[in-house]
View 1: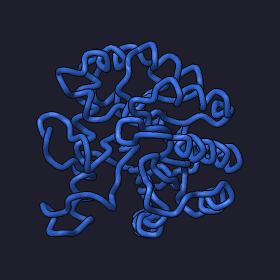
View 2 (view 1 turned 90 degrees about the vertical axis):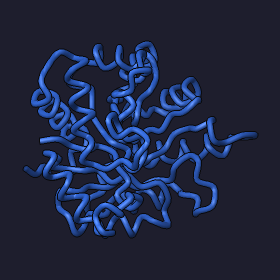
View 3 (view 1 turned 180 degrees about the vertical axis):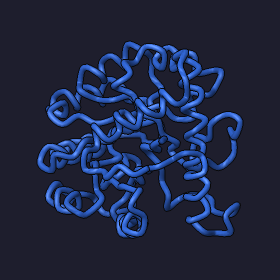
View 4 (view 1 turned 180 degrees about the horizontal axis):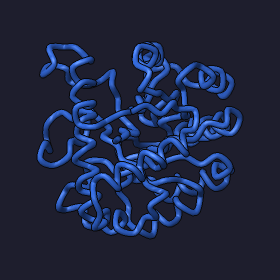
Amino acid sequence: MLVDSHCHLDRLDLTPFDGDLSGALFAATTAGVGHLLCVCIDLENFPAIQSIAQEHPHISLSVGVHPNETTGREPGVDELVRLAKAPGVVAIGETGLDYFRSEGDLSWQHERFCTHISASKQSRKPLIIHMRDATDDTLRILKEEGASDIGGVMHCFVEDWETAKRALDLNFLISFSGIVTFKSATKLHEVAQKVPADRMLIETDSPYLAPVPYRGKSNQPAYVYNVAQRLAELRGTTIESVAELTTRNYFSLFSDSVESS
C-alpha cells in the first residue's frame, strides 16, 4: 500500500474525471494508494476538506494556514487547537516560511509560524512544514520554539543533504514529491539515497509538481506511485519496499490516522 502524505484534494483538476472527485480517488486506489492526507492551507476552506475526509475513511486531514496566504482569517493558537480535535485531523499545517513569493517585512510570517508550532505542542499533533528560500530561519524557529518535542515532516523537501541532516536532528521526517523524479534534482537524489529508511515519506502535493512522465501537467494522488518508483531506483530497492517503509513511517508519525488496506 502507498500513502500520499500531502495532497490538496479540494484543488485537483477534475476535468479528466468529469468533475467528480471519486474518479480521482478511484484512480489513486487503482495505483495502490490506500491512504491520503488532505492538507489545509486556509481556514475558510477547512470545512470543505473536512467534508471530504468525513465521506472517505481512508482520507485524513490537517488544519493550518499556508505562509503565503494573506487574504483569509489569521489563525490563533486556541482556534487551531480546537479544530485539531475534529475527527480525522492528524496534523497542524501546512505552515512554515516562504520568502520566494513574499517580500518586505515578513515578521507576520514568523508570528504565524510560531502560532502553529504552539498549537502543535498543545494539541500533540505533528507539524507539516513548508520551507522555500527560507532554510535558516525556518530551522532556527523550529529549534527555538521547541518544535522537536512533537516533530513532523518537511513537506516537498528540495534541499541538500546537510540541510536534511539539520531537519532530521530536529525530529522531522523528509518527504519526497515529484521533484525527486526530475533529472536536474541531483542534490535531492543524494538526500533520497542517504535518508534513513525510517525517516522518509512520499507525497504528490497534487495538483502541483507532477512527477515525470507527467511533468507540466496537473498532478493527482495516483502519481505518488511514480514518486515511490523513482525513490526505489535511487535507493537500489523495490517499489514494494519503499511502499512498505513509507506507509509504516506515515502511520507512526500521524498516529491518529486509521490505517486502511
